[in-house]
Length: 460
Image (cartoon, rainbow, N blue to C red; front, side):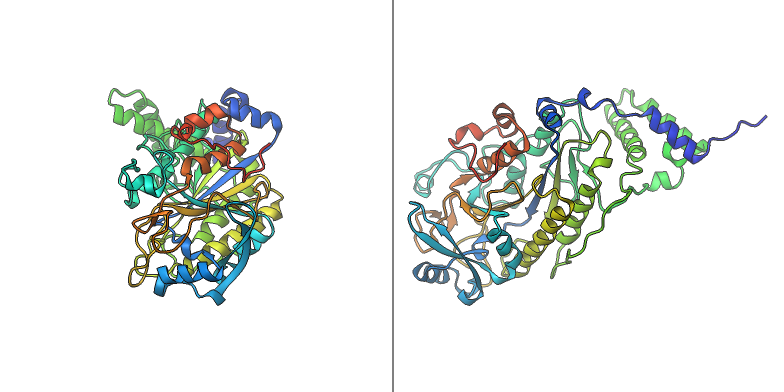
C-alpha cells in the first residue's frame, strides 16, 4: 500500500512544532532581560551616508562675518545665503546665540529640528585619543588610513577609532544582549555590512516586505517545500553534513539548515503589514533609494511582534549611497535624506512608536573645508544627525568648528573631530539599554575619552 504523502499545510505545522522557539529568557543576556522586564521595545535605525557626507553644505554659519568666511572657503560650491532655513544655537560660552542655517532642500529636517525631534552632533569622527589640530600637527596619532573610504567607513562600523576589529559594534551589542544567539536582533535592508558582522548571529537581510522562497525552495529542495523525495533528500544531506570533518562544508550545511528553518519560522511575518506613503525615490539615486529602504524598515517595525520570541531590541542597517562629492554639490542627496527622514518619522508617529525608535546617521568622514573646482575632497570630522521621540532635539551637541582660512579646528583644510565616534554611539547605545561595562565591550576605545554620555538622549 502506498504511503500517504503529507500535504504542505500539515508539513509546515509539523516543522514549526519541531523547530519551536525556546523560552525568551533562555537566550537573553542581562541587558535584554532588563529590557524584557521593563516591557519596553527599542530599535536603532542606522543610516550610513556612504562616501563621506559634505555636512558643511548642510549646516551653514549664517552670521554675517561667519557666512562671509564660509563663502570665501567654499567658493563655487557654497550655498547662497538666501537659500538657508535659519535656526539659532548658543555659542561655546553659552551666552550668545549664533545663527546657522540648513539649506532649503532640507525643509523636513529643519521642521523636525524645530519640533525638538532632531539633534545635530557637531564635528564627530574617528579618533585614537582626544586631540586638537595643533596636537595633530605636532605628531599626535591619527586613525589608520585616515582618508580612505573603506577603512574609515569600516572603523565607524567597527566602533573603534584606534584599530580594526574582527566584529562590528552592532554584532558585539547583539552578543551582549543575546549571548546565546538571536537571529532577529540585527536586520539589514542595506546589504551586507561590517557593523552587523562577526557576532554569534549574522544579520538577517530583507529586500522587500515578504518572506520570499529562494531558488532551492521554489524547486522543491527544502523542508518548507511541502515534502517530495528530492526535497527530503536535500534536507537529509544538509543535516548529515553539519557534522562533516571538512570545516567549510559543515559550516555551509549548518548555515543552510538555519536559512531553511528560518524561512519556516518567518512564513507569517508580514501578515497585517502596514503600508506607508510619502517615501520618495530621490534624484539621481544610486543603488536602492533611501526612501524605499526606510519604508521597508517601517514595514518591518509594523510587524515587530510577529518575529519569533518578539525580540525587545533590534538594530536596522540602511545604506544611502552617493555621498562622495568630488565633482558635485550634495543638494539632491541632502534633499532626499531630509524628505526620507520626514516620511520615516511620520510613519513611526502613526504607529505610536516614535519614542521607541532612534534614527542616526554615520558616514565615512566629512569633506574638506576648501573646495576643489567642482566639489570637495576627503575630510575628517563631520556633523551627524539623531532623530526620534527620545532625542533631546532642537539643539547642537558638541563643539561647532570655525569655518575659515587657518581655522584652529582644521588640519590641512580638514576638521579635526571634537567628538569621538565612540562618544556619539555610546550615548545612543546607553539609551538602548547597555550598562557601562557592556559599553566598554561594545566600544573598546571608549575609556580613552572622558565623556561617555553627551546628553542628547533622554536616558531612563
